[in-house]
Length: 117
Length: 117
Length: 117
Image (cartoon, rainbow over all chains, first blue to last red; front, side):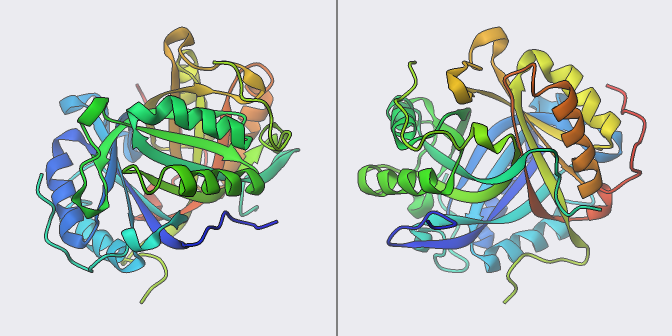
């Protein structure tokens, strides 16, 4: 009985989740792609950040962005968020390790050209 | 000071998250139930998959499906996804271990009849 | 090559995810704040719970609430859910550890006044 699902080709990657104002979505996704992320999932969200700063229904609400990346790309995303976002915007970001099938799909070239949108 | 929340009856189960085109929702949920999942949460989503394949606003967008299951059921879900979905559809799936209250609720009979919908 | 993203100030906190009927949202968020949570993210959801109890399109659907908190606050949330919710409502809740930047933002005073809403 395995502790974690397996298949012919599974592996561990990092899931980075970012919650930010909707207005930042295009810029954020651009920065994810530049950092090497090859895909992302966006869900509408609302909420309240720490320090009672409202990050909710202002400006069309929030987006919750998830991307599965290599540890190196996650590190690069973290650096961009720290440098360009955290001090200026109400935003939450967290990472955790997940198991995926076909890990190669998430571990592509380290800094690909941003995908066309 | 505990490292993780506890209560009278907590335990570890596997959270399986799947992001797929909305058009696959009914079939996917059927397959989750057949694999032994007893419940799931669906949120609307959009996004872009690896290899610049757009999995976004086509066909009504994506769904993000989460289900909490035993490691055995997670393994079964993984096999179904590998066999019947991954090669044909733009889809992302990942698993991680989580702590739950009342773990028995998620660890029911290994292959129940699919719930009526 | 680090295993997990780092930055000048990262740390581990607990992500508590709760899926409940929308009608419970205001009360739930109040209870999270009373337990010491400083922020949360809410996404619309629908789904089906264990035991074939429908928790879906009834009463406006479900909400998926995520909050990043200290282990102590997570424990307190767990106690409130166990005492006041689990036996009365169709609800799923799970926790897992995540890495965050600026962990101090999530590890404020243990039981702050509930933020104004």
